[in-house]
Length: 194
Image (cartoon, rainbow, N blue to C red; front, side, top):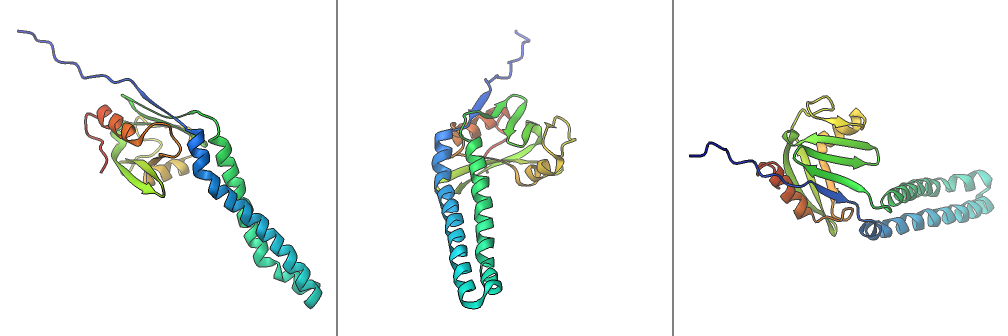
């Protein structure tokens, strides 16, 4: 009679890369809209300033520009932010690695390594035409919890601990079902989509 115990199956790591083409398609409409809003509100500000100044004097003309200037500033900020995000997503890079030890994520703000024991559950939701899978952490997990290694600020990590670690289908080249299956396999069926 053999006294050997069966070995726990081992799985190769799942490496999830970004998908620049899908990211470009997903953000193109919003980027065009914000640039159009910035240009349109800027032009309206100029027209209303000239019209107001010619009818009511310089002071009231300058005052009539205020709502359009606020709209321009907001749209310009959004356009810059979207341009930055689109620039980051235009290069294929590794954004997530799932292996036997846990989740290893790369964000623009830094990296994070979270062991499987720190996760509570997975959730899958639709967001427009895309879906998002979120890794939810157990309550009380912080940057000083055992096994957590991160270069993120404690404030940003606290946001992840509260809201979860989301992965959008528009940003990655791996199907979300594969990510969910790998998570379930690495946790021996504990971590499933609920």
